Image (cartoon, rainbow, N blue to C red):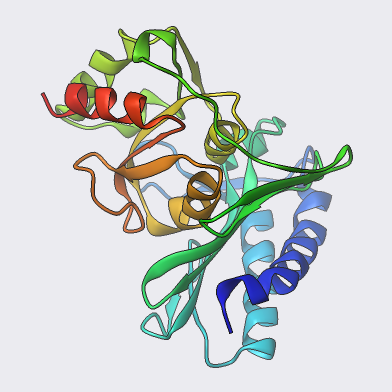
Length: 260
């Protein structure tokens, strides 16, 4: 089976996870700070309920597959097919009642991202891709995703979840890029990557990401014609410092500033 053959199952995972999450959104749910004294890093009952139901369905349907999830760790991570799950990417937005969060469902084959979906159940949007193409399915219908051309940083819209994610010299590197762009928007988490794929933003620069923050987004960005790497130009699937761009020219220009 190829990764695309699992697309119907990914839709099923998105549906069951949404059913677990939505009763908690804009409710009075409490969150727990798992940062242990660092930058506030909340987790909620919704995060855990969502990942629990997705893991259950994966184990029932594909018991030989591996799973890597934000809340409950790794099982069989060396399998040919490994599911990489972030039940709510953007928990801070979630607990603030803002709809810029999503469920990330990624599938790796032999250690390489092969298929990914970002599901936003409140807006009923599903962004998905297989590295060769990318699609948005929403209440307005279904359409192919394509990045937009952008000749330079001076014309670019940049996004970053929060400058607090940067440590040491990485913050100075980010600010060098930010000073060069036309517009910066903060606080969008996974939604920003999908906006790059959809041709509404040009650049996302982040740091200290985990695999579950990014694996599902790689096939969407690449499927829409964009590029996503670490700051050194290598594969992004391991997380760390990540740069995603719609136009290779912007990616190259930003990379030079980040590594100057």
